[in-house]
Length: 239
Image (cartoon, rainbow, N blue to C red; front, side, top):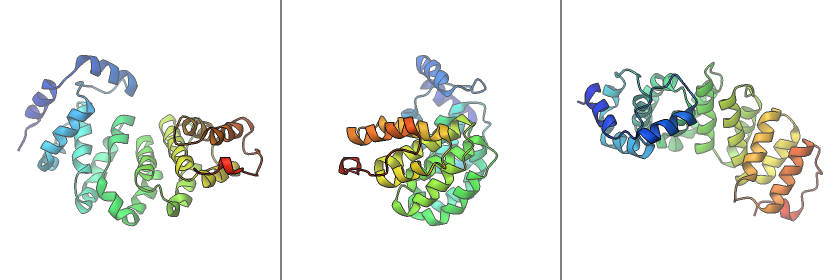
């Protein structure tokens, strides 16, 4: 069984001061204490310490890396074990990097079972719990049958919360990439918060997976809101 001191010693041995300063600026959270371990190295440690999940959950959350590893270890569990522990770690997530890297492959085989959790997290009072729900939809539910849930979830976001707003925009941008016509029809409904709509269009237009014509049409929506012409040409359809 690994001790907290042993875990810190391993992490400190992998510390990169330049990365610590760089990543700290990206995280934009002055309350976080970083050791400065790169994410690939932490993922490798999570694989090495796969059997240490419950031990890690007893460690204090003094450092960003420890909390990151708690999430990474829980994410590796089988679905039943993951469900038993997720509510212990999700409230610890307080930055976009830990949130977006908190992936659980087991969800993909249990998507219907996990939907009540998605809905619960979308109603949370915590900003990063709601963002987690949105990025989990993006990573596991990007299929036609889940588009109504995706659209409903993004319509209801608090656009004044930056990381929730950006999570919703990222999700809709991916809808535009994978389901272009459905995504455009949703944008034209005008039910999406304006800041989310603008950011989603901007992010979609950064993708190499959309054609130049599709991007021109989306930019016209960005300029004119949802009043762009209704007749989509063949060039505006999915490749």
